[in-house]
Image 1 (cartoon, rainbow, N blue to C red):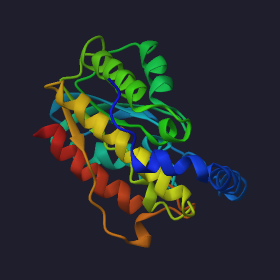
Image 2: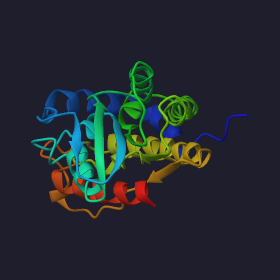
Image 3: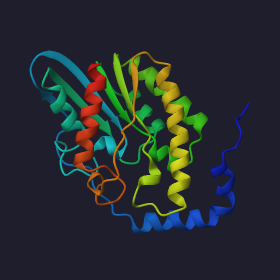
Length: 235
């Protein structure tokens, strides 16, 4: 049976005209940042071979950084290359939902030892329900740990969207509540897979951690994210 309706889901109904207007305003005024330049696959470091996959949406792709070296991929590879010969691949695209990423990875050839995912924001903005999100994340982890062979997967938490400076209130509050709801579902799915670890970044309210668009991580956040992900991958 479906659970009780949350307060934000009730309040959102009379707020629909305001939320729609704010959504249109955000899209109209949004500062569009490109995905960073740089390679999306390579090899770095010395030691035992480690095949790494990074996949997901615009944050996985590194939007908010100038180059891939400053983004999650570059900084994570730099962390792991201290101990391994890292053969890495980035499969991420701005706007991708969990379903988009799953479709992409089903067509991907290869095997990986470890993977990092970053998804959820576009599932929130597309109105994907918690149940559908859970099912798609479960399929994604099944594919990562099955056909793609990953022995350890770090699933990054759905971001706290209520903290995005680019979003006005009450839109930020409504999206933030839904993001939290999906993240609880993500934690539930991660707990079903012994290979998976859920990564929640506890970041301070520091403007330097946000990109100029008020929506994406800055290189400083990518550095923190990379350190935390590297720790979980090696734990």
